[in-house]
Length: 509
Length: 73
Image (tube, rainbow over all chains, first blue to last red; front, side, top):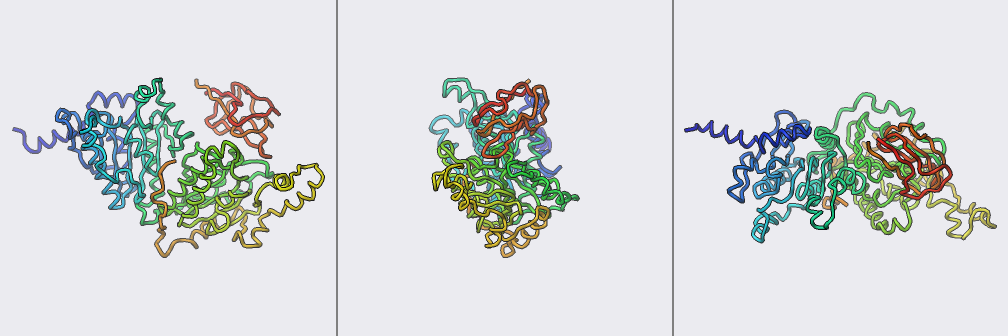
C-alpha cells in the first residue's frame, strides 16, 4: 500500500501536470507559455503559494480525473516584493472553461484581494462556460448567478489582466473589468468564439478581425498595451503595478529617482516648433521632464490626439494627460474623451496626482461628432475631472480654446494652472467669431473693424494678469515646478489618499 | 508580405509629400504633410514600411479616412 507521502506526491504531480504532455508540448512548439510558466514569470521567483491545487471539476464525476486544478491556477505571489492574488487560466485543461470549482477559486481570490488590500492579476485564455455543465435550466441555476458581487467593480484594489490566447466569456469579462488590459498579438478577446458567432449570424467570422489586438488597440480602446510575447505581456503587468498602490487606502509607492532625470530640461523649449502652424509629438516633451525612462503610455494606438500614461516625478507616480498636436492638431474627439475619462478614473481611484499638458484647437465638431454623442462624452470627461479629488496641475504649452480649456483643467478645474510664455488662450479663432457674429468674411466691408474687436490679446500675460493662471513658467522650469507644486499639494491630511468618488464608474466604454 | 493602407486622419489638402516611392519609412515616420485647420498635419506610418505608391498628389484635397499611400512590410 502507498504511504501517505507517496499518495500526496502522486496527487500533486498529477495536478501540476495540467492537460498532459502532448498539449503542453504543442504549446511549447508554438512558443506559448503554459499557465504555470506564466505565473512563474509574473511573480518574484519562489514566492507563489497556490490555492486550490487539488480542486477538480465538481459537476460531473467523469470529469474529476481530467480536470487538474479545474483548469484555473490560483494563488498568491509577490510582484517586486508586494503580495498579489493571481488567477491564470490553463487552456490545456478543458479549455480553462468556467466550472463550479474554479468559480469558487476565483471568488476566493477576489474576496481575499479586496478585503486584505492586494492587487489581483487575471491571465486570460479560456473557452467560456463549461459544457454540458451549464446546459439546461438546472445547469444555469446551479452554476450561474450565485455571487451578487461577481462583476461589481468598486476599485478597492488594482486589477490587471493579460489576454494571452483565445478568450471568451469570463476571461473577457475580467479583462475589461480590469484597470489595465494587455493583449498579446495572436490572442482574441471577444464575447464568444468566432465559430459560435458564425453560427449565430450565418457568415464566416475571422477571429482576429472580431477580437484581435488591432481591434482592441485601435477601435475599441480596450487594450492598454499590446505585447509581442507572453513574457512581454507579463512584464507589462509588473510595470503597471509598480506605479500603483496595493489598495485604494494608501498612496502609490515611491521609487528611487534614476540618474539623468531632467538632464534635457535646458533643451525642452526646442521640442516645440517655432511656428504655431507646425505640430510636434508631445511625448518627447513628457519624456524630457519626467523621471528618466518612467513614462509608461496607455492605449498609445487609440485616440492618438490625446496621450495618457503613468510616469514618475521625483520618484512619485503621476498620471499624465496631454493633447498631442501630432495627430489632427490635437483636436479631441469622442474617443479621446473616453480615453481621458477612463484614465482620470484610474488615477483618482488609486491616489495618483494628475498632470495635464494643454495644446489643442478645441474639440472636433461636426455631424459625425454629434452622432457619436459628443456633448455626452465631453460632459462625462468634465464630470470625471471635477470629481477628481487627487491633486491636479495643468500646464498650457500652446493653444487652449473654448470648452476644451475647461476640460484640460483650465480655471479652477486644476489646483494649479501654469502657462508657458508660448500659451495662447481664447474662445475661438477670431476669424470664425467674426463670421458667426457679424456674418462677415475676410475682404468684406466692415470685416477689419469687427476682426480688431474679436482679436483680443490671447497671450499668457493676459490670463496671468487676472490670476486665472497662477504662474507663467519657462519651459525649462517645468520639471522643478511640477515637483515643487505636487509637494505643495500633497494630501497631508489623508496621507495621500483621495475620496474615490468615481470608484463605481464603468470600467470600459 | 503585408500591405498597409495609410489613411488621412483629417480632411485637408496635401501640402508636401516628403517621401518617395521605394523609400523605407521607420515606424512613426512622416510620409506627407497635409494642410488642415490652418496647421501642418503629418501623415504618419505607425508601423513603418516600404512606400509602394501614393494615391494622392500635392495640392490635392483629401477626405478624412481616405487612403493616401500604400506601404508594404
